[in-house]
Length: 124
Image (cartoon, rainbow, N blue to C red; front, side):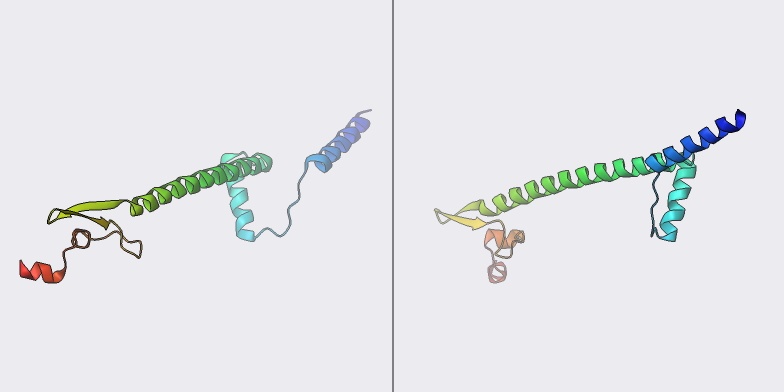
């Protein structure tokens, strides 16, 4: 009777392994070693939970990356809109508009934005 129970338990174990087990081939040696170390250190050698945590972390990272891309695109749009805005100056009673950015898209230095050239500085 006891032998039958052991046999049933083994069959049950094999059945569970076939249904829920996972075999991964072609894993680099260093990656495998690091995976095992992580599992031992933080997951009581539970490879399944480590794999789940890694998958959750990867999805979280992708979400963060997408959000950062959206934020960066928004900032780029703001900067591009700011390029269009112009700085108004009055010279001799006439309003003159100067761009805050040069044609290369770089922020103008204060002397460029003011319209003052090197020859104007020498005259002063």
